[in-house]
Length: 135
Image (cartoon, rainbow, N blue to C red; front, side, top):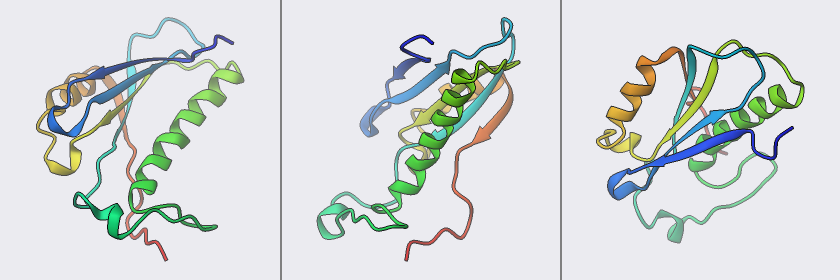
């Protein structure tokens, strides 16, 4: 296996940080179509929240709402790594896009999302299930 199993590019994201697009290097024939996994890294918490409510770890919960988003990204990356390690042929190119501004209206990521979505056979949205609650 190659040392890197994805090509990573970043794109300007304005005041909320850069957007990230990863194209995974998976086994299979040359791929014409793609699958897009779409997620975001911003949260709904106001600036300064961690000062009054710092991250905490327990058996079931790690940090604030941010952990529930980023864990989905990690699970998806590990799934791609498993496909690569098992040399499983994949019929489509797989791309993951993480936007930095989804919670505030996607002002800088909209064009990038539309471009990648138009190229895609499927879009998988990496959002947590409804009703998730930290206790």
